[in-house]
Image 1 (cartoon, rainbow, N blue to C red):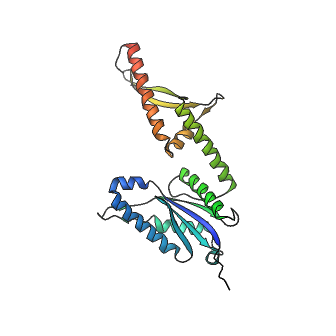
Image 2: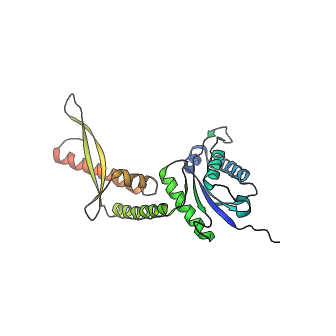
Image 3: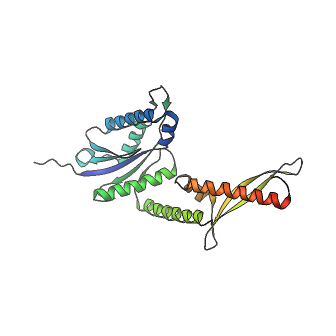
Length: 239
């Protein structure tokens, strides 16, 4: 009789901010920590599933039906997290604590095809990464809608940065003793085409978690410098 080994659930694990570890300790030490991480992951999963490295700092686990019956995926992921975030020691003796995120998609509730499960686990992972360090999420229709909204907002923010649709406001900070303005705080505002404003506590975290933070930062500095020079020319004072 052929042994059943069909897929059960899929997990995607992302090591947060691993680039900073490479920059701090060097790529060789980073590789050693990555190997230790993979070894811990393999030790935790054992023969009950399959592990693949699917990105520079991402791993995927597929659990087998014949070894995973009756196991709650979220409980399993919590136990996995405890195993993986413990302290890692580099070749030079430096200790590092890793943060991770895990996205989960369950068979057959979230898909019956491997590519569908992978896509849905990745959606759960992206929302988990947005929510913060060591967050674990299982795919749901609500997460899917949230992911779609974030993707649409990211696309609109990219367009707003490229087409100079953001606005910069300077909020003066006054010395209460002298009554003079001593400095200003630069505030970015995003006004959409329909005239509504998207709050900075929405679009700035989005920029921070994507590559958009770099063009956004460049735009902010350029606008602040240009405005300062303009005001200095108009008033004849150095600002």
